Amino acid sequence: MREFIKDILVEDYNDKYNQIYENSDLIKYLDKKTGAIEGDSKTRRSLGNIYAIYSVLYYYLEMDFYNNKEKYKKFDGFEYNVLWNFCKQQYGGNKLQNHALNNRLNTEFLNKVARDSSKELLIINGNKYLIHIDYLYVNNIDISKTVVKIIEKYIELLKTKDFKLSSDLEILRNLEDLNEKKFKIDSLLEEKSEARIFEIISYAILKNHYKNQHIYIGTSLANIKKEQLNLYKTGRTNANDGGIDFVMKPLGRFFQVTEVDKYDKYLLDIDKVLHFPITFVIKTNSSKDTILKEIKEYIKEKSGGMEVIIEKYENSIEEIITINELRNWLNNLNESSINSLIEDIDTYYKIELNIEENDNEAEKDDLE
Image 1: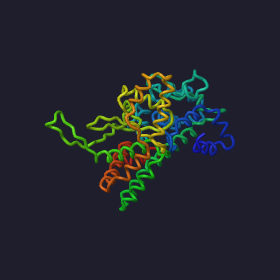
Image 2: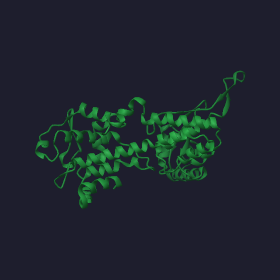
Image 3: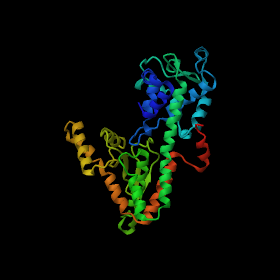
Image 4: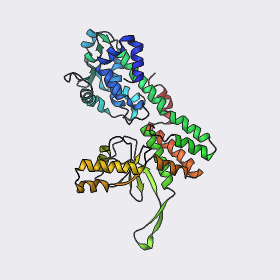
């Protein structure tokens, strides 16, 4: 049980907190879906599913269904447009897709936590939605207010985590000494860094590292030109981009940011791009030689020793880059490149969190 969930349960139910937790599939589901607040988590934020639950419970409380079973049993659901507009107004909600209100929530809930697979969490009544009453009561206690507290606390913790980099960037901009700037950026490169932050910072370092390198390219010896290496970020982290996080021009190199957990994810990334060579940027302090050795051992194990499979996957690994290489390249950058790097972090951080000046006030009011 996550600490913030335990604190809320203790506050609401005192010594019965664990009994409530153990008997609530809904709270257990939220416990599984709120891992993004942990620094070393790769877990998706799951805002779509969480906001689907939040939207129903928000209007459930607004319409005085709390502790009113008989009234709720006769209710036929909240309108889709009302719920969807509510979700879109929440923190990070304006980039959501409507999958959670189109049965994705039910599928995951039944697979992950539901003890009774015949009871879907979200009842879909045509264009109306409501939560099954059996998930709103534990031992005849209406837990809806507690669930809303858990969701709102999760979003509060996400906001705090998200905007920590904003304060770090402000400190960076105010630093005048080059070594102090490098030290501050270096401190953000940790194995426990939040996955999105690591991806943004690693991109900024790689972009400014490669831009100082050139190749000579042309269609014939007569028109060979000197070209700068340019690295492009393909989109937000966790985007459905086929396993490509960065792309280099003009070489056409693919880069995938990941971490050391399960090497089957690496092979899946290779399969996604049909075995086009990939450079893996890995959130680890282990040496690149150690990681490459482990990957090769994993490939050998999965292949059953068949050389055709081993060769196919090994040839798809172009390069391994770890935190060690990123730190070395960071320390080799000059002041102009470091300042450019800081601006790159700022730009892509705002894109990642969809931070725009016009949204600042709206974001403050999201959950108030």
